[in-house]
Length: 410
Length: 186
Image 1 (cartoon, rainbow over the protein chains, first blue to last red):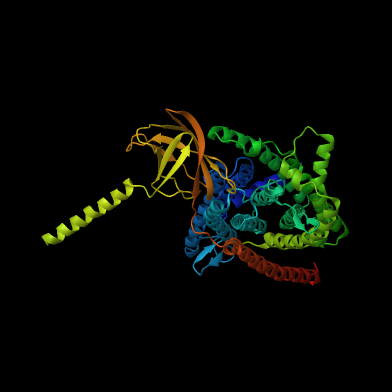
Image 2: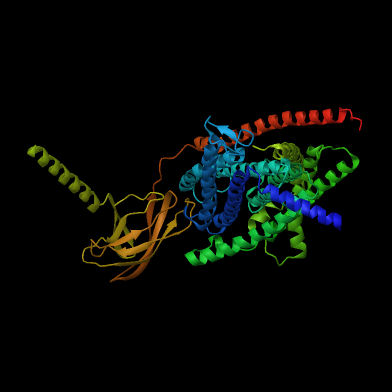
C-alpha cells in the first residue's frame, strides 16, 4: 500500500517535471496540430467512404457533391495546417528555440526546417489538391463510372497514402521522443498520447480499404481470374499490424488496433447509407438503377479478418518472447506472418458472404459484394501464392516502418 | 492632345458596341420539333462540360406562343452520366422565349427532354444536343501524371529501408557492446 502510494507520488512528480520541460512549447505545437490533422484526416476518410457509395448509388453528377466537400475539407484543412507548421518551425529553427533543431527536424530545399512527418503530409495533401481538378476533368471526358482504377483517382490515393504515412511519422517521432526523455508525459493503458494517435492512424489505414474492397474486381487472365481483394487485404494487415507492434513494442497492440477498428468500421458502414439517403432526400436526387442505400453487413463483418491476423501477430510475439528468440522487442521472421495472413485474406471474405447466405438470408447483399466476394475455389487457389508473396513483402516493409517509427525522432 | 482623347473615346465606344453585340446575338441556332411545334434554340454559349449553358428556347413559328416545362437533360446512349435537372425561366429580353439553365457534367450526346404546351395541346419530347469538352488529354499522359507520385513514394521507401538497415546494425552493435562490457566489481 505504502509502496503504491510512493509510486503514485513519484509519478505525479515526474508528470509535474514533464510539464516544465524546456521544449514543451514545441511539443505542444506539434501535438495539438497533429491531433487536429488526425481529426481532419478521419473526416476525409469518412467522406471517401461516403463518396464511394455516392458514385455507386447516386452517380457523380458534379464536383461539389456533399461527400467531396467533406473529403476536401479534411484534405485542405490538413494541408493548410501542415503549411503553417512548416513555416512556424522554420522560424523557430532560426530562432534556435528549444526542441527545434537538427535532431527533431529535417531540412527541405536548404531553407525550410520541419519534422519529416509534416513534410510528407504536406506533399501528400498537395498531390491530392493537384489530383482533384484532374479527376474532375477525367470524369468530364469519360463519364461518372470512372471509379477506383482511373489515373487521377490513383493519384489521389497515392497522395492520401503519402499523407497518411506522414502523419504517422509525425506522431511516431513524438512518441519516440517521449520514450527518451527523463520525465515523460502521462500514459493511458501504458501508451502515451502520440502512441495512441499512431494506433488510431494505423487503424484508420486498415479501415479505409474496407468500404472500397469491392472496387478490387478480379483480373481476368484467360480462363481464370486473379482475385485482387485478397491482395489489398493482405497488404494492409501485414504492413500495419506488424508495424504497429514494432512501433510500440508492446504486447496487445495488434489486438488493440483491431478493437478500435471494429467500431470505426461499423460506424462508417452505418453512416454512409444514412448520410446518402438524408442528402439525396434533401437535394431531391434519385437513385441509379433503383438501388436504395443499405447497410453493408458483409463489409461491417470484415474486421474478423484483421482479428485473425492480429491474433497471429500476438501469438508470434508471445512465443518469441517466451522462447527468447527475439531480443529488444524485435519480431523475427515477420515475412512468414505475411505469408500466413494471405490465407485468411483469400478465404474469410467469401466465407462471410457464404455464412450470411446460409444463416441470415434475410440480410440483403449488395450486387458488388456478390460480384467480387464470391470467387470459385480455382480462382482462390490461383490467387493464394501471389497473395502470400505480397504478404511476405509487406510484412518485411512493416518491420522497416515499425523500426523507423520506433526510433525516429525527426 | 484633343484628337488623341477623341480616338480613345471612339475606341472605347467601339469596344462597348462589339461586346454588347456579342451578348445579344446567339453563337449558334438550332431548330427542333416536339409534337406539332417547331422550336428555335439559340445558343449564346456552346454546350461545354462543367460550364453553365447559356441558351434560350422559343417557338420557331411566329405568332405561336408556347410554354415549356418539366425539362431534364438526359444522357443519350454512349454517354456515361445521370440525368441533370434543368431550370427554365422566361427570358426578360425576348417575349415568348425561355432561358435554359443547366450545366452538363460529361461530354458527348445528351437529350434535352421537355414538355411543350401550346394551342395544339401538350407534347413531351427530346432534343438532341452535343456537349463539347476541353481538349482531350492522351490516356498515356493521364496515367503518367496520375502515377507520378508512385515514384516519389517508392524512392522514399527505398531511402527508409536503407536508413533502417543501417540504424538496426548500429543498435545491434551497441547492444553487443553493452553485453560484452565487463561488470565492474562493487
